[in-house]
Length: 342
Image (spheres, rainbow, N blue to C red):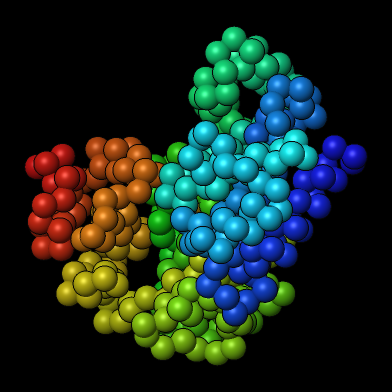
């Protein structure tokens, strides 16, 4: 308890100084914050300083946020996005698009649960350093995550959504995992697409959950049906394992069609867009998921999305490959994935 108390106090101080997004009404501040790194594992505490992994909004700290960190005693480290504290811990600002935070959380869970894994980590760390140790244990961390978390969050959410009067399905990374039949990486969020017309059923389906709507970057409580362009409800429950939140995405699924939200002229018949896993969990077709992950016209795919493409593109059937290629040519004719889809 004594070892963890400074980190608990540091988390409270960061939220007080930077603001807490979950307190609602502000577009900046702490979105998520948790201990991490080998130094936060009791069996490895002598190896390195413990860390706090911070999801901060905006991702690049503002001048005011930098001043607040300095006022709390934090000093920029040599590594980008890292700050040291004289209390003996390190603050790491997480890259939202890399998937690093979720990978680190899975690794820490393994090291806390498996003494042999912690010993292996210690040996690699001592010989070759932190990055080599993280990479060496990554497959074991993913395997442990798949065994202990796996598709459990999806199954729990499916139990809640089966009574829904309307179409729904898993999307984003979970949809790709369901397509592959395995958990390919840990996820920060669990994403579900819901027929917009059915959203009035959400409070009943998710009774006891915290429901927030991002409006201009700030949270407001979900109090009733949302009209376009608002399309997201963030739902949180302490019993949902392995992910930070359930992201409910309101979609136009009318007329038997799935429509790409960024360009509604791009469609798929719902009977083709809505697939089912062997366990009966509905998910969005992988070619449609990859179209979202291709990024917007003004930015490249994020690191985790590029990894998803490299895993999933070879598994697309001929029709799915042709559809994705055509959709990218229409929306982003110079996209780098096009050469790999020819």
